Structures are given as C-alpha cells and as structure tokens.
Length: 194
Image (cartoon, rainbow, N blue to C red; front, side):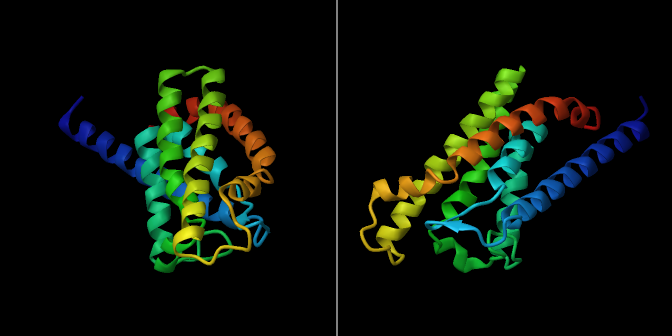
C-alpha cells in the first residue's frame, strides 16, 4: 500500500467515525422526543437507552461513549435535544440529568461487554447490563437531586424514586433485548465499513 492510499484510508476511517458519532447523536435526539411529553412520575418515557445501547454495541465502547458525550454537549449548548424538547445549561440541575450522564456509561459498558462476549447472548447481556447502569445512575441522581436542590414531591422517598422506574422498566427490558438482537445482526454490516 502506498502512502497516498494509506492516507486516504485513514481519512476515510476518520470520516466514517465522525458520521457514526453524528448519526447516534441524532438518533438520541429523536429517541428523546419520539414520545414527546409522556412523563410518568418524574421520568420521561423515551427510546434513549435503546439508542445508547446500540451506540456501544455497534460503534464499540470508545466511539459509542463519544457519541453520547457529543449528544450531551449539544443539549447543554441549548439545542432542544433532551426529552420534552429541552436543552441548555439549566438541565444540569434537572432531576433527570443523571439519565443523560448514564448514557455515556451505558454505551461504554455495552461496548466492553460485547467485545468480551461477541455472541448473540453476549449482545443481549450487554444490553441488559447497559439498562441496569442507566437505571442505577439515573435513579440515584434523581433521588439526590430531589433531596438536595430540587423541590421534592410530597412524601418523596428513595423507594418512591425506584417505584417510578417500575413503569418504564418492562418497556426498557423489551427494548434492551431488541437492541441486543438488532446489534448482533447489524454489527457485521457496520464493521465492514470501518
């Protein structure tokens, strides 16, 4: 391979990485608002966890996490890409901002699990672990936010915070399994273009 060919291949690879990052950032914005303003308890019902898992599974841990960081910064810059068409720096103190933070970890961990266990079962396990990480970080952030700096609903407890999460849990578990299956089928196609 000549130096020119190597340089073109490297540039092509970098371009594809940027396209993949932009694509998953856009998918997160769509997934955040696909259900518009459906909110149960204090938690918006979205498809963000599904897309965060797919980002990690399809792009790998590093690139998947970067795409979620880009998504978070786009929203913090004021573009209304978060749930309920929200955005801006004030979302940092929102009780649900922990879920946005969790997407970086969801993508990274899902990508790591798939790298270690590249079977269909490994992909589904990666998706379920990603969902658990999303719930763990997001729900604990929400609880702390309501207790320390946000106005908590009457009678708000740690158990109530987790009870709110019982509503989207069946949907998220089904979508996690689907993300694992889709990711397993789509990954060879995505890898071909890397």
